[in-house]
Length: 454
Image 1 (tube, rainbow, N blue to C red):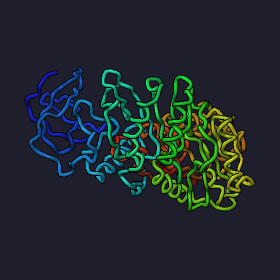
Image 2 (image 1 turned 180 degrees about the vertical axis):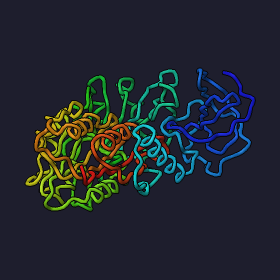
Image 3 (image 1 turned 45 degrees about the vertical axis):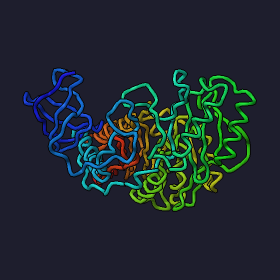
């Protein structure tokens, strides 16, 4: 570690919420804990030919956007929780930074400039997180159990008494959960507790490496009765999860605007932030502007988070997902909501799409695309290939409009570049989606319109 004696002026934030400055040699310096506009001194921990990385150790000009973190476990000190990186930046400024990230990625990576920037989607900044994966460690030397996220840049579990980004009722369970695990015979073979909240249920998934004895099982039941939670047990992969005791309230979330209820298992993928998801689904469907006589394809449909609301508005909706199991779950959810008549589902390897496969699923008036972090490159490339050579899919018509929901601005930008520069679309609108307040994670939504002349 070396001390940088000069004062550095911070110009911006990067995707990891580090301040970005330049030293007197012109080299880029990434600074943990620093905000744009501040003048700071830095302890440098890493040096490369073109950049350095360090931690702020002194400041003589403070940003007006700096705030006191809301969580006692946030910080740069040893043992600080690594779950959040931006609590020292005002919440509205966090959203502005993420909006700029979306713009910059679209332009620099995809050479795409949206015709209109929509207002970012934002919501509650505390108590928003309805899904979380807490690590569990029995520390024999201390004779105690730790439950929480990992420490910043460490494999160790942070010593967390509270967590401000989960609902208060869940935060209040952290210390009782410590006591519970400490009392169990298998306490050193219980590596993880996963949280999954529905509208009316708190589900806790206990990962156990050994079968639990009757005494440990009874302790779980007693805890569930006292704190009104559901225990689910997971012995191996996510497919092994099962409810400890049958009965009780179903785990589900609702989309009231569309009259849809979505049952799910606690290891299923559902959005971390239900407040934002509700707004996001509504905005996506308004941007897609589906008419009653139109056919829509929902790519990467999951459990039907967008498919089922779309089915309340369109003539026909096809949901496409990579897993037969997930496709079957989507069908069941459609039946549950009385939407089986105009929905269908099919399994496809969406990372190996071709023009021929694209044509096999038929033309649609509009698309909803909601891929994982890897994006939808194969899908975007297939439609671009057809635009360049229509003989690859004779008679197939590209959608007039695409709404793309993204959890990775760089893969959105890559795919947008294909749609705009090769497939004949314009990016008519885009915005950030603040699904994870206080973190550097950026989600977004973009709209693509087919050029009338194409």
